[in-house]
Image: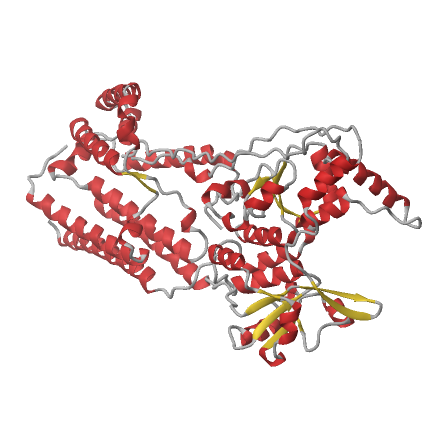
Length: 216
Length: 205
Length: 196
């Protein structure tokens, strides 16, 4: 064995020790680095940007139009309590009380990219708060019914007859609302049962988790 | 000699690994604003519903105990506002001056009372401030309006149904003899979004 | 930012393309580090070669450190990463069967394909056995299902069980890894050298 070979062998041996040291050093770095609080969901700056935009609002007229035309992409979610929901709700609405919003059973309805989820409550307050939470968690396709059910009753069920001086559009809108009101049950014959909104039973489908397969 | 070549390769990759981490740490900037409260606590707070202040309560408390925060636009604020209100419209929350101001108020003894055109409007600001860690914020549940050259404020009942919906519907149905039938649309089947993370390729050697 | 695919930075459709590319790289690394030789793989059981242990331990340590640095630097959200659910008893029994197969056959599933790719007959035989095993398992699944689904502990990690800071866990894990390398080298020096 030449001397040169020996020194090289020595370096090789040392090299593994150096590498081991580097590894421990980096791992220790993780422990030593100053910790800071992590942000859950989107950053506050983006949150504000989304929150001040009025894009999230959908008007009662737009919603009525969507329901009448049976728009398949709409998913109505009633944020009120179960009792209120059982008394009256919009057709085909699903009841998710505000307090259950983030429950595992319901989150799948809010966090999705297939339907346009329209949140509503008596006015737009609960729905708005739910929207804000959804916004923070980065959920897409969430909308709020502007004015909520109060506005719904003021416009669709009991539309106000426009003044004589109002533009033509106001009358057109009135006609639409009147017709929509009939669709939603105003003036249905006495014999008919109350237009019970079809209620859905929420079945929670728990997807079976895929088991680990293979692996060395 | 072959062994030496191999360790050289390992060393190079180790140095690269170290370098990437170093560059990352050096260039790392801590985000300026982070949410301190998570969504679950926020939801809890919302359900408790003690973050509102009705107009009567507002009038009865001592002005020295609170600071009014007007979250409407500067233009609306200039037209008229509540006495001694500070204007930070929601989108300006992160500007330098308002950050400074808000920081000085954070969790102090004074209550920050937020108001806007309506409670919805103030709610955005409240949600933001609460989640940023401000505990002493309340919403003034009132509507403000500038009409006839005067700034007016009136109480606003949150989430109060304007009419008894079920009754009104029943009355509306029976009042006229319209023969229109209500089309019952079939309930839609909703498939909640699949969590993508549940399907992942399996690892293995 | 990341994970790139769940956050939509890379469209989901690229999933398989990326999987194939990573798979190719993985196969290359396996073959390059000699994992297509069943003797090298079995060496870890007989104590004359610990490359398997070293490679997998190192890769685990390096990737966990890298991931947590990325998480710290906000390039990645570690909570969004997928954690395989733990089926305790299924994993123990499956692991034992797998270990016996590993020892007897000298391959694990991935490396057997690696070996077959360079034309090793034992690897091809191993793959045939593997396929038969899969077939038997699939046919007997009705009987095995209770075991297969039992004792599901959910998506848990060691950090959740021990309830310590992940950073400390990583440091301890790294030290354990290096300790095991030193120990394996010591064992290797005691065992008679085998040439293969």
